[in-house]
Image (tube, rainbow, N blue to C red; front, side, top):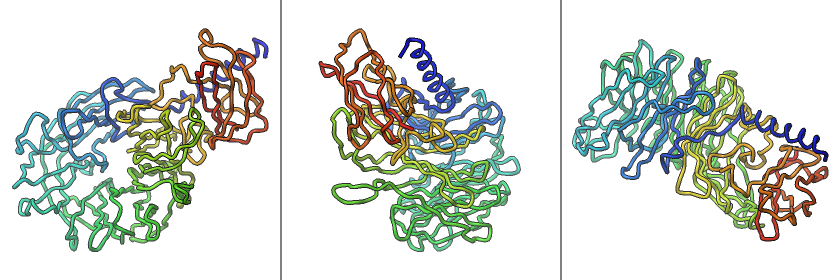
Length: 543
């Protein structure tokens, strides 16, 4: 290849990588400040196009999660607009505890001062910030425990008449706190923080065992509706509405498929007033059934998505389990988007070891998209790997549709080769859930492309191999890194993800061009090794 052609190819490759990364990307947060963290809620301000993120941080000296609200302008200008000295010990993913209304950011949480051991300090916290982070309202709603009872604030909703409802669970004063029998609990305020009513307590008639609300949103009349699963006794799913006079109406109830799941049920109300909920397959305990219900309590459709399968310990089985749906939303065109977490077990090829290993993890994730009529458009199970082949943590807690129709997901992502650490992160994907139109890095599993780093990747590591064009078709050029410290007797190989080697050779120039016309479309690992055993690797996609 002549020098001018090489420069042209390099420019085209650089433009491709830059243009893709400029539109779709991964962004980590607070990497220099903590060992463990995650995004709990992400919201986009439609006016400024900024992202508001509620991140959870796990201090070393306390049990629980301390929150921070961040504002992200552009791609990576991160502003810390609120630090909390409050502790939330209920670490599961329930409703949204942060909302925007165009001018202000509203938040709620259980209020326990970290430095206080006084049980009388327990209450719920309600606050309002302007969009630059200036505190407008900071109010504590005292909920003095009765005989050791506990109150958890699980979310807030901006309801009609300029009011806000803080909701969660608690034990009524007339109940024995020694019995684990929580009630739906809520407090109604004006948005300026002035008190309206509460705390109120409610439990559906006939529910005699432990059950709690796990998600809430606004109905089409701007009143709050919540989902409530009773998994013992009658095993029913309820949709309950809090009326303007603080009464509870049962909007819908239906039988639950089974009670073995510990999943926290989620809820979406569509623009036409239908409810989207999750039920459980009566035959397959691993499957989740997305269910659309109209205002007359009729099921419009019930749909699920297929699960990856393979050979594990000599048996053909599903490769994922423990599927929890963490968020359901409606896109502008009426499609349904969802994200969640799951466990994974499968065999993955490790180029450095030149073999497959069976590995598993309990903290991986998925994203999926259904049409308005219930057709599955796509589903992706996400995978990231450490250098030794073991799986890295990816937990998706929230999903939104951006103003441009693309998708933003957020949660926690492990640090590469450091399994005990994780970072809050978010990433912007196309409407297909991928980094390009072809979903080039998705086969059985969804992978991070090599030119769009995962939060755990260090792009400056000396063993990272650069290849272009990527994706490509008939040929690929290998750019040898670190030329000054490398001899040129270097062998190369091209393997697929099953571990089969398709091409071998010796580099004959600084930038060797490999003919790949005969390769099938897919993902390949290109490996270089010099005489001293130094290894470089990179992923390449054949279109």
